Image (cartoon, rainbow, N blue to C red; front, side, top):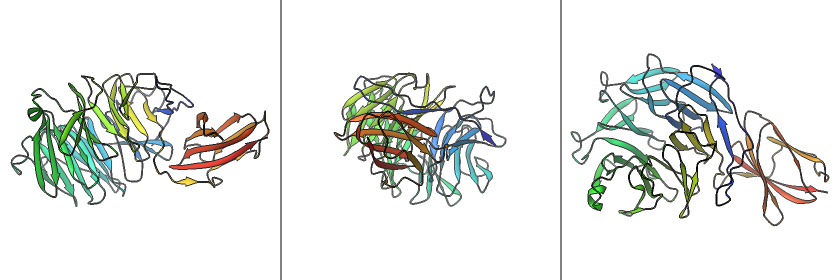
Length: 399
């Protein structure tokens, strides 16, 4: 069944540093629908499809359209979601277990047919595409799914797991699993070897609380603490990097080196030791989750609010000078006082346009939805268009 999307276009937000924010606001359900669920988690599969989920309903965003999935005989909250490269979907549901959608069929792993804990709460999920292993954090240990079977890592099976209450987890580039517990323990699993460190105890911060963990583009870990802000971990050393917010509970790193963190009401961007606070209308009133997709877009989910997608360019994007197959630009050349039209061939996919002059100065920025008309002064310009996960560069002349 298909559902509708409401999208807000061409919106700029200027922060105190003059940064421009391009974003799209998604409402993945019918207008005035009574069946909208609160979005609690956002994930992605190996082909770039986005999944947003709440109670027992899942919204899938693919090729510019939202569709919906429902888990049969389930009414509990979906806490974590991820997918692989083969179209299989993994959904961790509170107090139930792990639901897997494979070959258009749902299958449940729970405490009746596997080692899955009962009355389970989940904290973190990650798919390792190289080893084809799914990792899921729970308050009773770490779950490993491989070849359609489960195993568990906890204090009973591995004594090095000094705290089974996993709050969140993340994979590093070599496939190692890093986990945090609520009482500030950092656990590292690599090649079946487990090490644990009580960070709060070692730092003399006995009330230190860990809430969320992510990894930066440089490979460093970053942890959100609801009572101490952001903490960076590198080479066995911890440092507090801000912001000094005592209610942070979410953090994620993007592909260009930014760290994004949030409390319930504010999104923070930590950029080269500069902290930018985002509190404007495009941020949900109450933030539930933040997620960076493989194309470097930042997704923000909130309570009973649209899903915000912040458009960012992916580093080392595929650059194409021939864009005739996907985007039409006409007339070429264009005369001063006449409109230059940019039209995407698939109106379900949005484009992001930036125009530079010969001095490499940014003079215009916008979202492209179906078509966009621009009136430029006489001169030579370069168009940079992000569309369909590629960056297109085009030189234009205005006579």
